[in-house]
Image 1 (cartoon, rainbow, N blue to C red):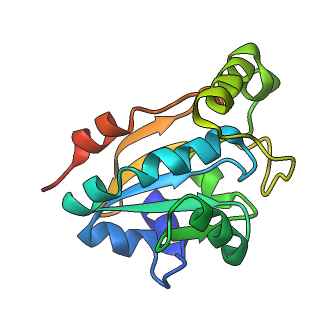
Image 2 (image 1 turned 90 degrees about the vertical axis):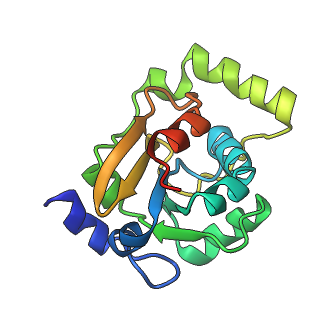
Length: 175
Protein backbone atom coordinates (compact mmCIF):
# COMPACT_ATOMS: atom_id res chain seq x y z
CA UNK A 1 0.00 0.00 0.00
CA UNK A 2 1.38 3.46 -0.85
CA UNK A 3 2.42 5.53 2.18
CA UNK A 4 -0.07 8.28 1.30
CA UNK A 5 -2.87 5.71 1.68
CA UNK A 6 -1.36 4.49 4.95
CA UNK A 7 -1.32 8.08 6.24
CA UNK A 8 -5.05 8.33 5.56
CA UNK A 9 -5.54 5.28 7.81
CA UNK A 10 -3.49 6.85 10.61
CA UNK A 11 -6.36 8.28 12.66
CA UNK A 12 -5.20 10.84 15.17
CA UNK A 13 -6.34 11.58 18.68
CA UNK A 14 -8.09 14.73 17.43
CA UNK A 15 -10.19 12.78 14.88
CA UNK A 16 -8.20 13.68 11.78
CA UNK A 17 -5.58 11.66 9.92
CA UNK A 18 -1.92 12.26 9.14
CA UNK A 19 -2.50 12.76 5.41
CA UNK A 20 -5.11 15.49 5.94
CA UNK A 21 -2.92 17.32 8.48
CA UNK A 22 -0.02 17.19 6.00
CA UNK A 23 -2.12 19.04 3.41
CA UNK A 24 -2.04 22.23 5.50
CA UNK A 25 1.01 21.74 7.74
CA UNK A 26 4.43 20.19 7.66
CA UNK A 27 4.01 17.12 9.86
CA UNK A 28 6.86 16.19 12.18
CA UNK A 29 5.89 12.53 12.51
CA UNK A 30 7.64 10.88 15.45
CA UNK A 31 7.43 7.12 15.89
CA UNK A 32 8.26 6.52 19.54
CA UNK A 33 9.75 3.50 21.25
CA UNK A 34 7.89 2.34 24.35
CA UNK A 35 7.11 4.93 27.02
CA UNK A 36 9.41 3.28 29.57
CA UNK A 37 12.44 3.84 27.33
CA UNK A 38 14.85 6.52 28.59
CA UNK A 39 15.47 7.72 25.03
CA UNK A 40 11.74 7.97 24.27
CA UNK A 41 11.33 10.03 27.41
CA UNK A 42 14.32 12.19 26.49
CA UNK A 43 12.77 12.84 23.05
CA UNK A 44 9.52 13.98 24.63
CA UNK A 45 11.43 16.45 26.83
CA UNK A 46 13.63 17.72 24.00
CA UNK A 47 10.78 18.11 21.54
CA UNK A 48 8.56 19.87 24.09
CA UNK A 49 11.20 22.62 24.12
CA UNK A 50 10.64 23.12 20.38
CA UNK A 51 6.92 23.93 20.62
CA UNK A 52 7.44 27.61 19.83
CA UNK A 53 9.51 26.72 16.75
CA UNK A 54 6.87 24.25 15.61
CA UNK A 55 4.14 26.85 15.99
CA UNK A 56 6.05 29.68 14.30
CA UNK A 57 6.92 27.51 11.29
CA UNK A 58 3.50 25.88 10.82
CA UNK A 59 4.83 22.46 11.82
CA UNK A 60 2.53 19.97 13.50
CA UNK A 61 4.21 17.32 15.61
CA UNK A 62 2.35 14.01 15.53
CA UNK A 63 3.47 11.12 17.71
CA UNK A 64 2.88 7.46 16.95
CA UNK A 65 2.90 5.14 19.96
CA UNK A 66 2.03 1.56 20.84
CA UNK A 67 -0.59 2.00 23.54
CA UNK A 68 -4.15 3.27 23.82
CA UNK A 69 -4.75 7.02 23.59
CA UNK A 70 -5.73 7.52 27.24
CA UNK A 71 -2.56 5.88 28.54
CA UNK A 72 -0.44 7.82 26.05
CA UNK A 73 -1.98 11.14 27.09
CA UNK A 74 -0.85 10.56 30.69
CA UNK A 75 2.72 10.13 29.48
CA UNK A 76 2.52 13.12 27.15
CA UNK A 77 1.20 15.35 29.94
CA UNK A 78 4.11 14.28 32.14
CA UNK A 79 6.44 15.80 29.53
CA UNK A 80 4.55 19.07 28.97
CA UNK A 81 2.58 17.91 25.91
CA UNK A 82 -0.89 19.09 26.84
CA UNK A 83 -2.60 19.33 23.44
CA UNK A 84 -0.65 16.74 21.54
CA UNK A 85 -1.81 14.98 18.40
CA UNK A 86 -0.98 11.30 18.38
CA UNK A 87 -1.76 7.99 16.71
CA UNK A 88 -2.29 4.73 18.56
CA UNK A 89 -0.61 1.78 16.84
CA UNK A 90 -0.42 -1.18 19.26
CA UNK A 91 -0.06 -3.66 16.41
CA UNK A 92 2.89 -1.61 14.97
CA UNK A 93 1.43 -1.79 11.47
CA UNK A 94 2.23 1.87 10.78
CA UNK A 95 5.77 1.40 12.10
CA UNK A 96 6.20 -1.44 9.64
CA UNK A 97 4.65 0.55 6.76
CA UNK A 98 7.27 3.27 7.34
CA UNK A 99 10.07 0.70 7.37
CA UNK A 100 10.70 0.74 11.11
CA UNK A 101 11.78 -2.70 12.26
CA UNK A 102 12.38 -4.56 15.49
CA UNK A 103 15.80 -3.88 16.92
CA UNK A 104 18.58 -6.40 17.20
CA UNK A 105 20.14 -7.04 20.60
CA UNK A 106 23.09 -4.71 20.00
CA UNK A 107 20.82 -1.89 18.78
CA UNK A 108 18.77 -2.08 21.97
CA UNK A 109 21.19 -3.22 24.67
CA UNK A 110 24.69 -2.68 23.26
CA UNK A 111 27.50 -0.72 24.89
CA UNK A 112 26.56 2.53 23.10
CA UNK A 113 22.99 2.23 24.36
CA UNK A 114 24.03 1.50 27.94
CA UNK A 115 26.57 4.33 28.06
CA UNK A 116 24.19 6.88 26.60
CA UNK A 117 21.38 5.67 28.86
CA UNK A 118 23.54 6.32 31.91
CA UNK A 119 24.52 9.72 30.46
CA UNK A 120 20.86 10.74 30.01
CA UNK A 121 20.04 9.63 33.55
CA UNK A 122 23.05 11.43 35.06
CA UNK A 123 22.82 14.70 33.13
CA UNK A 124 19.08 15.10 32.57
CA UNK A 125 17.56 13.13 35.44
CA UNK A 126 15.54 11.03 32.99
CA UNK A 127 15.37 7.40 33.98
CA UNK A 128 13.93 4.33 32.31
CA UNK A 129 10.95 2.73 33.95
CA UNK A 130 10.32 -0.93 34.50
CA UNK A 131 6.98 -0.61 32.76
CA UNK A 132 7.21 -1.23 29.03
CA UNK A 133 4.16 0.37 27.44
CA UNK A 134 4.53 -0.98 23.92
CA UNK A 135 6.93 -3.32 22.17
CA UNK A 136 10.37 -3.03 23.81
CA UNK A 137 12.04 -4.24 20.62
CA UNK A 138 10.49 -1.64 18.29
CA UNK A 139 12.90 0.86 16.74
CA UNK A 140 11.90 4.54 16.43
CA UNK A 141 12.06 7.01 13.56
CA UNK A 142 11.09 10.51 12.45
CA UNK A 143 9.52 11.57 9.15
CA UNK A 144 8.77 15.06 7.88
CA UNK A 145 5.64 14.86 5.74
CA UNK A 146 3.97 17.42 3.48
CA UNK A 147 1.00 16.64 1.22
CA UNK A 148 1.34 12.94 1.99
CA UNK A 149 4.98 12.82 0.85
CA UNK A 150 8.05 12.20 2.98
CA UNK A 151 10.46 15.12 2.59
CA UNK A 152 13.05 13.96 5.10
CA UNK A 153 13.50 11.14 7.56
CA UNK A 154 15.69 9.96 10.39
CA UNK A 155 15.83 6.22 10.98
CA UNK A 156 17.53 5.25 14.21
CA UNK A 157 20.38 2.76 13.82
CA UNK A 158 20.45 2.34 17.60
CA UNK A 159 17.90 3.03 20.32
CA UNK A 160 20.49 5.46 21.70
CA UNK A 161 20.71 7.61 18.56
CA UNK A 162 19.84 11.25 19.15
CA UNK A 163 18.48 13.05 16.08
CA UNK A 164 19.44 16.64 15.39
CA UNK A 165 15.91 18.04 15.58
CA UNK A 166 16.95 21.53 14.50
CA UNK A 167 18.54 20.25 11.29
CA UNK A 168 15.43 18.21 10.50
CA UNK A 169 13.19 21.21 11.09
CA UNK A 170 15.38 23.55 9.01
CA UNK A 171 15.59 21.20 6.05
CA UNK A 172 11.87 21.21 5.43
CA UNK A 173 10.39 24.32 7.04
CA UNK A 174 7.85 26.33 5.12
CA UNK A 175 7.44 29.73 6.72
